[in-house]
Length: 275
Image (cartoon, rainbow, N blue to C red; front, top):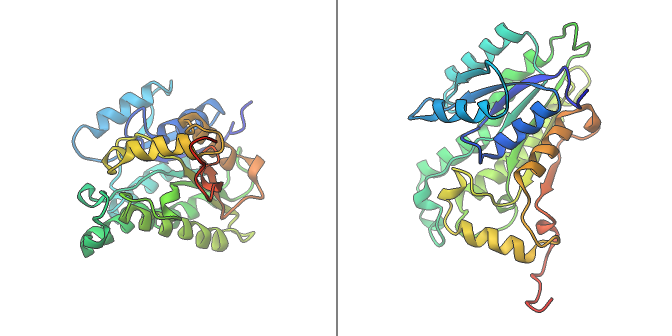
């Protein structure tokens, strides 16, 4: 028996085996969850996601196209899940995007309105849009789920709290995502809804999306230098934290931003080089 045996839900955002979403899905599967997956309907994304899911040992995966910026696409995903499964225990939101031309040091002040709007819509509003569609399915029960409710987890980064040169408009979007988490947690947490919403603030990671952030190598090197544990977190550590937050072990935790960054975020003054 795993922490998530009998629970089922959807992971949004796997791009390949280096995605944080991939490591989250890996931990969920290892803990006994039944996991469905989505892919962005463009280019070779279906093939990439299918290949990544195959390495998780999931046979005949539930895998559907989803453009999270499109309400009709989200409607289709959750409608299909409801039809195929009847209940929903969790949703993992690991989606973010900003124009890489404005993810470079000293370019934030030049960010156009549409680039700003698109970053916030893709990286933050989509969590709210998913919650709207997940809520009615999470209220349903069956033989394995005797009480209504569920849990949602999303991914952020410290650049949503403090200035990280080069992270720019993505930092604005992550700040919006973290506060969206808190407002959703407040409204969905009442007993008749019983849905928890939490955020994981993970350290810099060379994902497909992260590679577009200017200075990513410096961000990773600086965390290794300044973090309390003198290293970067692993994908597995983020995955295991998500499994905890989606399990009944965290039944009293909601509206939180949990830092999984080896203690980088608690350091106020950078260490001296001879420390």
